[in-house]
Length: 301
Ligand code: A3P
Image: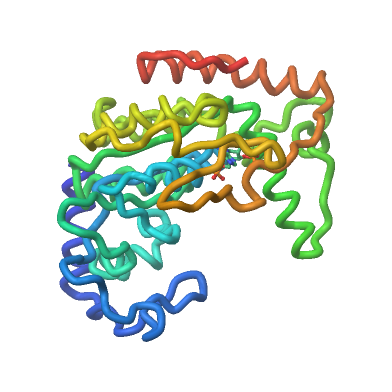
C-alpha cells in the first residue's frame, strides 16, 4: 500500500512537474555542459539504476562502488544523487534522476550509491515506488567502528571549513552517560533502519556486504555481489593489490592502478576505553536484533 501511494505521488509529480531542464546541475557541477557530455558513445543510453548501494555512511560505500565498477558489465554513477531522500530532488521527477545516471550499453547494469538512504525514512518507500524489484546493496561495518569513522569524517570537514572541533568523548558522553542522541550513534542502530527497509522490500532483495571483510580481503565480498546481481564472474584477484602506504587495498583495472581518495581510510582517534566500552554495550542489543532480522551474524565486538 505504502509503495502504491508513493508510486501515485511520483506519477502526479512527473505529470505536472516541469519537463527536465536542458541544463542539469548537481552539487554545483553542470552535468550537461557541452564539454562534459559531448556526444554519448554510440549504442549507449541513460537508464535508471538496476541496483543502488543504499549505505551505510562510512561503511565502505565508495570502495564497493569503485570495486564493482571493475566489472565490464557495470556502469557506475559518478556522483551521489540523493534523489529519494531530498524532497527538492524528488520533486524534480524520475526523468531528472535518470538523466544523472551514466551512459550504459544494453548489456550493462547501472549502479549508483547514496549512503544516506539506509538511515532515511523516506528512501525505502520511494525506491520501492520506482522499482519494487530493484536489487539493493547495503555495506555495513562494525557499528562502533562506524561511529568513530563518522566522527572522523565530520572532524576533518569541520577543520577544512574552519569550524571548531571537539574530542570524540565530548560528543559520545553527556552528563556522565552515553549521549544516545548523537547522530553518529543513531546511524549505527542498524536494526532500526533495517526494519524500515524490510517494510518495503523482502530480505532476499537486500544483499549485505561485510564492510570489515571488504577492507581485509575484497575479492570474496565482490564475488558474492556478482552472484547477487547475476553478473558473470569477471572480478579477479589481480584486480586488487595492497598499498602499504595507504594501508588499504587499491584497484588495478584497464591497465591502471588507483587507490581511493585520501578521505577514505583516514586514521581514527584513539577513544577512551571506558567510553568505547559504554558505546559497545549500548550497541550490543541493537546488533542482536539486527542479526535476527537479517538471519545472519557479523563479527562485531
Ligand atoms: P575510514 O576513512 O574511517 O577508515 P564510505 O565510502 O562509505 O564513506 O566509507 C569509507 C570507509 O571505507 C573508510 O573509512 C575505510 O575504512 C573503508 N574502506 C574500505 N575499503 C577501502 C579501501 N580499499 N580504501 C580506502 N578505504 C576503504
